[in-house]
Image (cartoon, rainbow, N blue to C red):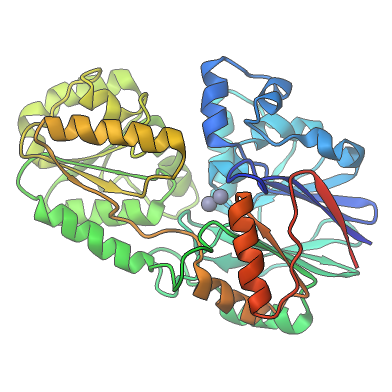
Length: 434
Ligand SMILES: [Zn+2]
Ligand SMILES: [Zn+2]
């Protein structure tokens, strides 16, 4: 018998964790933080798993207390914090290997190292399209899919009762700039084999059409950078978006400029990318992770700013990140009138982000520094992308995930309109898959 428990990530975007029980074996899919609550918890110095759970910063695993002893594997889908960030805080509660793609595992190891946490369970780097037996009855295979972090995967659990496919997060990008496009042939084969349940990313289901390709975003970033080739140039994007960072590096090289990667999270992800042979930042510039180093570096380059591209953290306006600190003069604000800040991102629509980005944009504009906003393409599927993947997998049941209640309902409506069965779940709810 298969049972699924929607532990977390079904009421709000973040803190993803889904548990799948196959007779006596339990597999945990993702173990992420809720980024906003996690920052609040850190400000309150909350460290223990119980405190973090209480503050809703990490998934509430007491919901599967009765399943804990049967957990046989922890499988994160990709390297974003809402999917791996809680592993260092929760994995000790289980005796199970952590299995993921090489970049996902490398980032997890960087995070644990940075937080001075030693992982109890072994980490295993899995290859795509290879079957790994977890127990006598359950095996896992990772299928290549595109997203805004590299080495993302559709997780396929094979069981005696049918296949479970977990699709958080993904986009159907047929012309990615790093890595391969989604493995359509593999998905079609899986569809022929039969898919019992498909758990699907609902983040952008309210939007019609298709999500733009990363190739399109790369073109926009390059154009924005070249348009501002004269003075000081700051770019900020997601630290995990290695494809985008590579485009920024290549364009900087084209402009004859060196890249300074400023901020701790950029270092973590770039070291992980180098570690697994995905992208080597070294030919393009230098890591400057800590505030003391950043301060020194900024002072030394202030007069030659046109020789550099500053790639900095803080695109959501986070007050502690490098960009805000510079603009508020807590770090030397080397940019001045006529220079440019490119935001290669969208504002993640939470109240806190919207407010802090508005404030930051205003401060930048007061300095007469120009801003290029939303130079970005999303990593999540829109309606036509959802229809496409469903046409390959042909699942018997679809479970909307990675969503707020409103988006969950939208996904349910859309999927039903295509003729598929849907089950809407809430945090903590369990279902038996017939
Ligand atoms: Zn996510
Ligand atoms: Zn993601």
